[in-house]
Length: 632
Picture 1: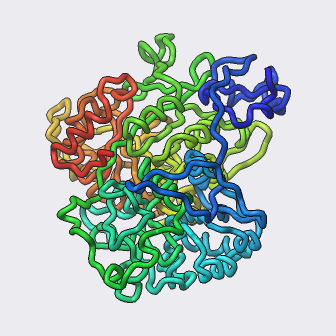
Picture 2: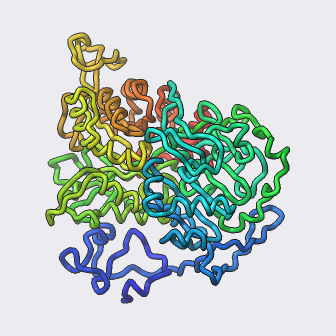
Picture 3: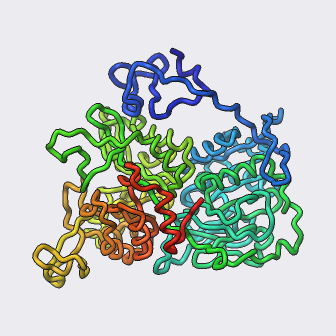
């Protein structure tokens, strides 16, 4: 057996990795990490070694050669400049920076880390993945002494790729966080999208680019969709037209890519945009200095979009989300399972049956990425409440999943304040931060959200500023916070006598009732609360949540289709995106819910895990039914 130190550069089976006791501090009985044992289901040996990974390429300003088709590159390994040059990544403490590193690593590039302001001026190229809230980002840059060196780097015109906030901070200012000044590189101000019926804010999902002029950065993108998650955007104006490389349509056109000389920035996330995003990163790191538009004529700068949004079908795609319910089975292994109305044991609760085992979480997630899932959600349905924060099993799942999955990842379960077995207390923000650093893009909050809305009601509708939703949203942005609601249907004979908002239902109750409402539950559906789903949804929006995952206990595991009445009631009551969940059993169910409600996405689990229906079948049906769909 080799110590783990000797395994650097070798590809390991991520679902069977076991920590060697000789090089890892003992954290559990037997000298093995609880995390690694739960992920592997085996102890006492290391997995077989597979082929070695290729050596990393060091991205530099050396131009790469291209064939006539514009895609092939010189794959010879580059070397960094002797003076410490090369490509650097600026991590000021943002959210999921790990995904940017993993995407570059997947392409074979090594990015140096900016550790001091002086590193900024050493860099030949700079990648700045700004993730989260604009105000928090600016404060962090100031506190760490990066703000002015970053401005100097940009004014020098050195190669730069900003992502999301890395684009917005280039403007003169932003309305986010009550208003703040930007770097002042690009004329204009960043403002919030206006929500409208059927057009929620944040914009979350896959949209297209309308290029204004040729650019090697966007070479090969065409009409393929890229992943956006933003509440704020910059408008294209005559003052910033020389910067505007591409726009995107969402209730109106906004700037999605900027470029001047070798300074680039994208509003979307290339590291979360699948293969097209990897191509864009490769275009920048592999030789962006040869960009065709570097010397673009004024005619190209003044060009209008090359085609209209309507002509190219440029609308935000409806998303297909795959959920993986992860828990430990009776042997202590982490497995993906699926319940019927939240019961995950074979034969039902009390039967003595085993926990349904539908596969290993990382391997299944990688399969769904390859098959075209738009997002993947890991939902931890085992407590692990007493584990030290660094030993939470789902952290390792996120780290390993993010190595080879380049679409958004959500993690839910246990995103709350807690005290571990050693008496160490952690806040919900600390827990969420650890998940973001481990590869998650969004965190899902469940029962704590119900508590928070009840507290909001008791305070007369005034937020306290201390709930998990508020603290995480302020630090990382509303788009990073998903609230998972678990309601069950309750029938009412007289809506006027019911204290909850009721809807007339096409499915009569046991006594012929024509009205119903949906009661929220907590603790995996086991404990009902005297508050309804619509009220909770409206409350979490006030508190700063950016998205709702709307489950339905009555439909879970039934394969009978989504509860359209529930989804309409909630989606029509809020202006943030709603993910429809529970009940999917065939492709038609996705088209029905995405055409028949204002849901932004639809989620399924069991039918994909059991390979009853392929993701491609679902998307083909959606596309044929007229639902905007990401097909590649």
